[in-house]
Amino acid sequence: MMKPKFNLLKFFISLALMMGLATLSVADITDGLVGYWPLDDAVKDEAGKHDGKLDGGAKFVKDADRGQVLEVDGAIGPKGGKAIVPHADDITFTVNDSYTLSVWVNALTLPGHWAGIVNKSRDKAPWYGLWLDGSNRWCFGGQNIFGSTPKAKQWYHVALVQDTKAKKRLVYVNNKLDFEGAPIEASGAGDLWMGGANCCGLGEQFNGRIDDVAIFNRALSEKEVPEAGEIVKILPVQLKGKLTTTWASVRQR
Image 1 (spheres, rainbow, N blue to C red):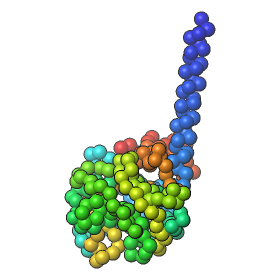
Image 2: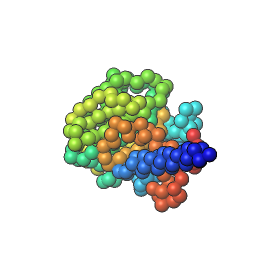
Image 3: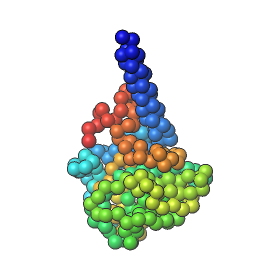
Image 4: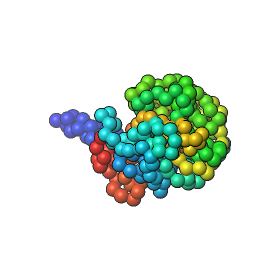
């Protein structure tokens, strides 16, 4: 008669351990998070103080796969759509700093020219960020390194990681290592742009959708990259001194 009780006790202990591990996982992914923009209905930083604004032909739209997202029109020139976040020192990095930029991106059309997706300080070198190049390849910009070519009208999670301990820049596409190169200086004092790049007569405009942009001041491990892609589901509200519930309970996709 005691055995069923013992098994039930083991069940509750196992459940408690699993819940504890889940809590640790949530805490881990938020370490070093200096900026997080869900891009639902505002260019609002839910992790720090880096709020921005829409400019030109940028708007928020309902996406069938990801809910509310930022859409930019790819128009060349000052009227082209983008979101602009003012410069801040804590989203710039030296060649000796590790960092990660995580973003979901969907190219509605492949541009056939350079197109800035998310980039910091393109107008004031040295810069960093994610582009599509003239051959429609993923590019970790600054000192450029190139990877695979995405398909149009398909969502991709892309994570750019500078790992100074490993002396590498690593780019993950849909949680798989796509290409790599050497660390770079990325300490320019220009603004953070989403959907274009502040250069070249404003010709590096992107036509597509962008969601859940996050910047960390550390290199995420290969195991953490998938968590960055799901940050909207696990980011705790306690980052802003509120409840200990997660975004999954307050933001429905």
